[in-house]
Image (cartoon, rainbow, N blue to C red; front, side, top):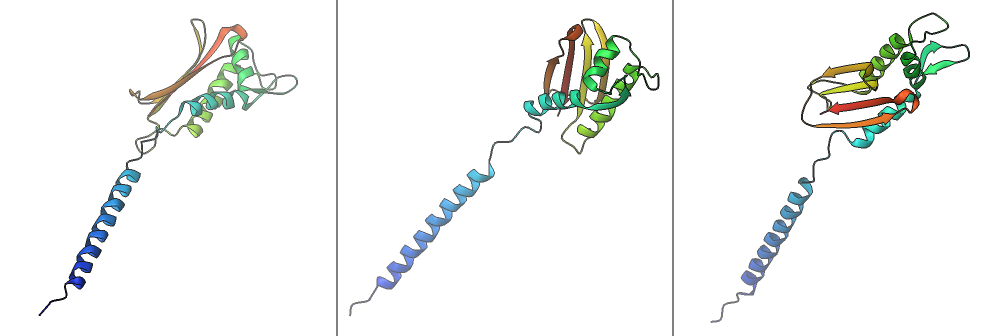
Length: 159
C-alpha cells in the first residue's frame, strides 16, 4: 500500500509561504514606524516669523498712516511719539510685540515651545527685550538687520 503524502506537503508549503509573508509585513511595518523625528520648530519658521511681524501694523499713527512694527522700532530708537495720542513708540512697540509673541508662540509644558527670547538692539542700546518661558538647550534662532541705525532683531525659540 502506497500512502498519498501530497496533501501534507502542500499544507507545509502553504504554512511556509504565510510565515514568510508575515515576516516581510512585520519588517515593513517596523521601518515605517521608525521614521526620523521632525524637529518641532524649523529654522524657516523663526525667520518667517521675524519677517511677518515686521510688516504687522500697529495702532500708532503718525501724520499719514498707522505705523508698522518696523517703523515703530526706528521710532523707538529715535524717541518719537505717536501723533494721534502722544504715546511713546517704545511703549506701543513693546505692547504690540508682546501680543504678537503670545499669539504666535504658545509657551507651556503641553506645547511644542518651551520659551522664547526677542531682542531688538542697536549697538549696545537695547530697544526691546521680551522673554517668556524656559531657556533650553534645544532652540532655533534667527537674526535680521534693519539697516537703519544698525538695528538688529534677534529671535530665539526654545523647544
